[in-house]
Image (cartoon, rainbow, N blue to C red; front, top):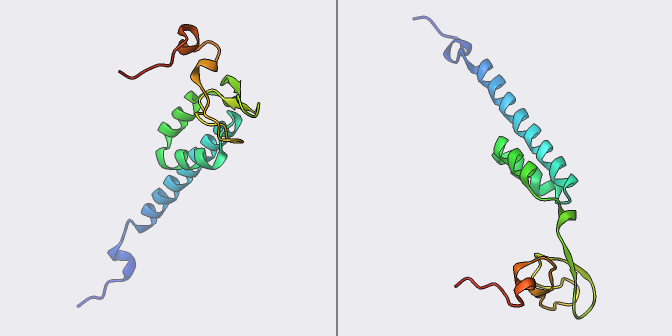
Length: 118
């Protein structure tokens, strides 16, 4: 009875390692690209790195389509005067509730009432 060597039992093990290394390298590349784009747009590098690492090309497309944080209008808090982003519901400094009517150009500001879901 002939004894087989271990290398003959798994003839594709070397090519499987190359494919796995290529996939990991590609995922890290997409993660870095998403992280850099997210950071340029004013968001967290680490969060966008994770999104790119997991979602690859879909994460990159999402990062490219994501808004610039500098383009979001800001409003002053009625209680402490801190400049807050328009999408914030509460002032991060004093905890005051922010009103959508204070945002210039919003539908609620032009009609003088808050938007309702009903």
